[in-house]
Image (tube, rainbow, N blue to C red):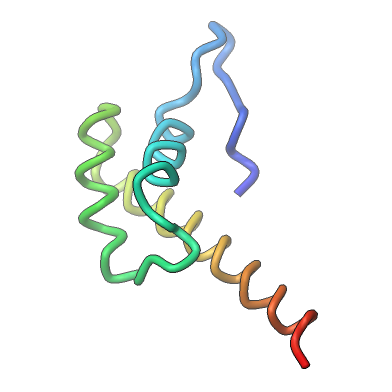
Amino acid sequence: PGAAGRARTNGKPRKQDLLIALASQRHDLRRLPLNRVARIAGDIGAEVNLHPGTARRVLKAHVQFLQNQASEGRTETGP
């Protein structure tokens, strides 16, 4: 949530941002079951050299944020 686009002072994206970007490219995070987040976070976290616990925490929070937004949107536009 809000992490996209942040960069370190050297201009490179942060590891957490890379994790979210790669997960978003590979999976529909708005529909991803939460029980699949840990494995995906571990796999992609290893690719970007991010601690597994941090990867799980960051990706789970992002997925929950997206899913909460989606459910709130449905409530507002529902019948």
